[in-house]
Length: 200
Length: 200
Image (cartoon, rainbow over all chains, first blue to last red; front, side, top):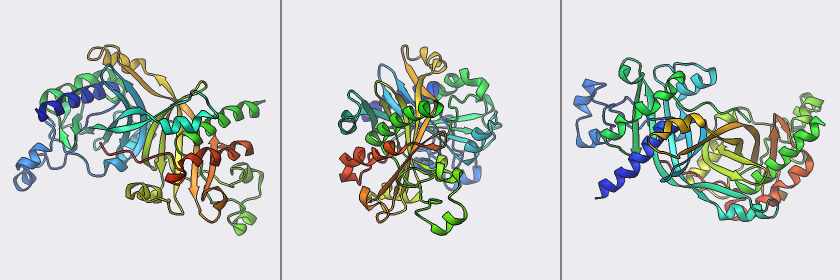
């Protein structure tokens, strides 16, 4: 039951994320498909296989929370209300800054999704100068998605591998089957919805 | 006239930002108050003085666009609708992660503000799976604010220096006089409104 409960919001979050803003990625380290030697020595355990995304064999790239900012956005559906940030590894950021499309192999984009909640503290602080001002901040973490570029390995899906994690665990196969079709409308931008935010 | 037009939204953006989410900072390099030697050799030109914030003598810290993410938020008033990101230098990020309050000297927090606009492209991509979904993305850059911690230099304002820039130019003195009073409600968190976003 816990599994089913966890999976439903994960599916929603991921599908929406795939279609809306950025992401779904594949981090190539430690997947059995990527390194047979490694898979024989490290992968293949229940722990390892359960931490890789279906179809793409992606695990969470270490340190992604500290990556640089591509952009931020806000998504509302009848089931979610989220503040979101897209971050990139060094290859991704360089490509975004230089406008390189298609993105080079090794690009990884991370999409971090949080609930959006009103901040009464901020609203009180604003009330004097700006009556009626409404501030919305991050409530809690929802899920994280990755797109990893490997033009040969993932040739069937535009060169991108996808992954969606909630509480450190990947979503199921149907969830990941939905990623690439959702990203197809962004084909002109190499299937990436996010655009680099101007520097204020 | 251009000056007046530019100043009005800057004031609004900065005051709202000060009160609402994070920021206003002082970057200490190149201010005459900070380095008399440097001021004699580099500062004192019209170009330098016009690039430092009033009161605090802060200039824009190089590379802030590439700093790590503290949090993101959304602010609406009757005059602005913004997506925002707070980024931190290494000292800031370490303090946020470890929950260090007050923040150590050397902390710099940057608040980047952009207009929030609907994305018709994203909405079309979402329409099939999520009828009525609404995606909002960054429109254009508005302003950037900084808070710099120097407990001795800025003892009169909680240890923080503040700055607000629009198109690379600092706002005026009245704008910067408003920063610290706006941040006072956040005294329990060392006058910082932003909190570190959980890792999804």
